[in-house]
Image 1 (cartoon, rainbow, N blue to C red):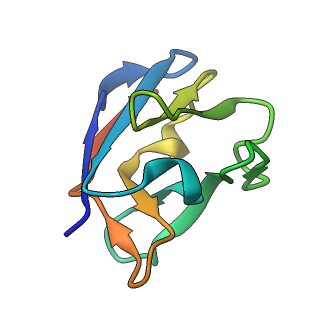
Image 2: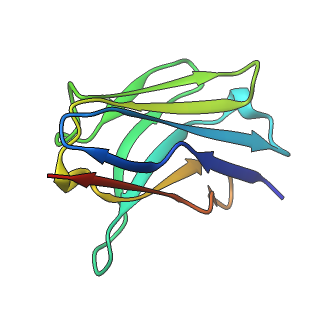
Length: 114
């Protein structure tokens, strides 16, 4: 069973930065598209960013220019660098691997204070 473990969440002031990490195991990491999603209570989980095995990236419009997704296949880890954070970025952030069935981490909470 695939394991995805997120870390790096926390409390930050608006305008600040955080870097999330997701360490994957029990997976041939390099061949899968990896992604970050986020969810706030009462709302659906939404896409934040994805990165393919070739390194192609895709971002939600709300985070373009502020967030950067990257991956280190040697470390089986995907990252999300979040800059210029806004209160509306407050959510639980989940790591995703595009396996079959899809795989999710347990989530890491990000709180941005105004």
